[in-house]
Image (cartoon, rainbow, N blue to C red; front, side, top):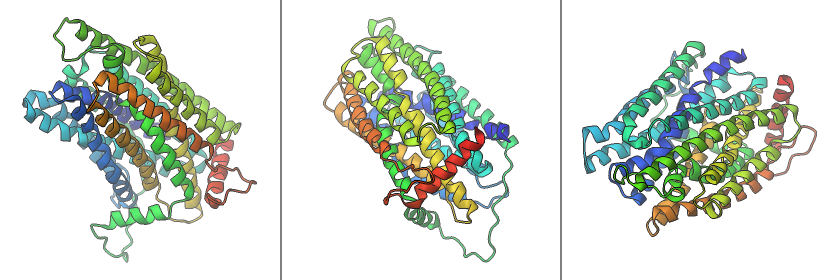
Length: 462
C-alpha cells in the first residue's frame, strides 16, 4: 500500500536534516576549532572523494546481500550506527581534546559522516524501489523529494536555536541523531523484505567481487544513465555552492560578520544576524522545494510536459539565482534570501526526475527477466553528487588561498552559474521520447522503455 511505502521512505527526512545541518556548519566548525579558511573548506573534499568509491561498492553489496533480514536493512542499520559514533566524536572533539588534537579527531569524523550520508541515500531509495510496483515508482521518488524538503526545513530550523550554532554542536548533533533513529525505527517496523536466496551452486565470491560487479554494471548500464550522470554532476557543482557555503556567504560576505570575534562586538552581532538570515532563507527554500516538488509530480502525472522540459527550467532558475548572488546582492540580506530560496530549484529537479527515470527503467527490465542493479545505478547518480561537491570545494579552497573568505565566496557562485547553465542545456538534450516516437541513435531503446514505464506509472496514478 502507498501509505506503507511513504513510511518506509521516512528516513530520508532524517538523513536530509543531518545533511543540511552538518554541511552548512562543517567549515565554520573547523574554523571554530582553529583551522584556517582554505583548510576548513578543503576538509569538505575528503568525504565526497571517499563517497565516490564507497557508494557504488555499498550499492553492489546491498544488491547481493543474502542476510535473513533482507538486502537493504543491514546496510541501513550499519549506517545508523556510523552516524551515532561519528557524530558524537565529531561534536565532542572540542570537549575531549584541544588544539590540533581536536582538529585531528573532528576532521576524519566529518569525513565518515559525509560518506555515511551519501551511502545511506542508496538503500533508502532502493528499499522503496524494491517494494513499490511499477505504477508507484515515479510518485514515490517525488515523495522522497517531499521528505527532503521537510528534512531541510528541520535542518535549517535547528540553526535558529543558537546565534552561533558551532558553539553548541553537541546538543544539536544529539537531536539530529535521535531524529534519524526514530525515522529508521518506523521504517523497520513497516518494511518487510524478502531475503535474497543464495545460490548453493554459485562460486564463492572474492573480496574484490563488489568492485568487479561495479565495473560490469557500469559497462552494461543504459546510455540514458550516462547522460543523466553528466547533468547531475554539473547541477551539483551549483547546488554545493549554496548547500555547503551559503551559510558562510551570508555571515561573511553579505553581513560581514565573524564567528570568532569577541562577544558583543559588531562583527559577532553581524554574524548572528547573518546566521539568522541564512536560516530564514533556508526555511523559505524548503517551502519552495516542497511546492515545486508537488508541481513537478503534477506535470509528470498529467504528462503535460516531458521530464526534460521540467528539469531544464529548474536548473536554469538556479543558474540565474547564482548569477545574482555573485554580482547583484551585495550586502542586502533580503535579496540574498530571495536568491537562496530560488536556488533550490535545481536540487528539487535532481532528486526527483533522474532517480524516477532510473527506477522505472529498472522495474521494466526486472519484469522482463533481465538482471538489474537498482541500488548500484542510484548509487552512481549519488556519486555524481559527490563529484560536483568535489569540484566546487576544490576550486573554492584554491581561491581562498589568494583571496579573503568574504571575496572568495561570491566567486564560487560564478562557478555555480556557469555549471548550471551547461547542465540545463544538457538536460534539454535528454532523450525522453515517449512510446510511438523513434528514439535517438545515441540513447537506443533503453530511453524509450524508460519513458513508456514512466508514462504507464503516471497514467495509473492519475
